[in-house]
Image 1 (cartoon, helix red, strand yellow):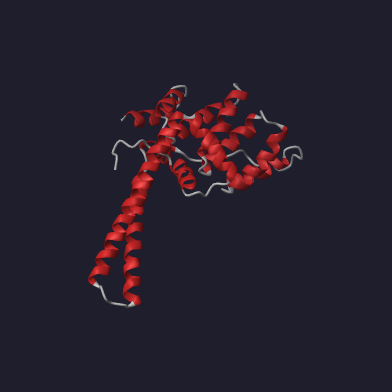
Image 2: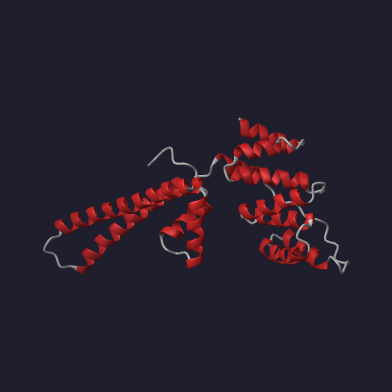
Length: 245
């Protein structure tokens, strides 16, 4: 295996694998091909992954076939179906073992992912005041969020966001919910919208911290460091120090 293989996030690996296995819909495949044409870095990552993916398939199959032929030759003349079935099971097991080994190699957590896990904790949320009819739907979703039902909270807040697309509170908590729900890509979109749409928002400091954590998780260490330097508090300084060590 290439020791210089660039880090590919688990989400990106899954997308590559779906494409290579033909598990995408027509529209998904068309969108993915367009991304490959437009994004040189993505294309390089995909080519590296594809080479390794096919190498695993070939090596696993080659090993499995060698075992099969060895077993077949040693049992030549035997017509027992049980023995043949055992040979096939051994071959399949070897193929699965090789694939598992590569999967573990690719999915080893990076330093950024380790730091994200260590320093990230979901925003505690706002006090749930259910008395206001105007904000009832928002606070109902906040209860779901606080209970860890992030998918439910996201669905409710996204409906409200249609009416108020630049609302800093909605964008911030949608970003926080997506981040807590292990969807870094969507989380960063909403958190960045918080900063762009409301420069003076009370949520900007936390939004910037969460953005830095998400960037670390995605392997964008340089951008994360730049954002953390904009925040002057204890946890950001501790994270910065940990990155540099």
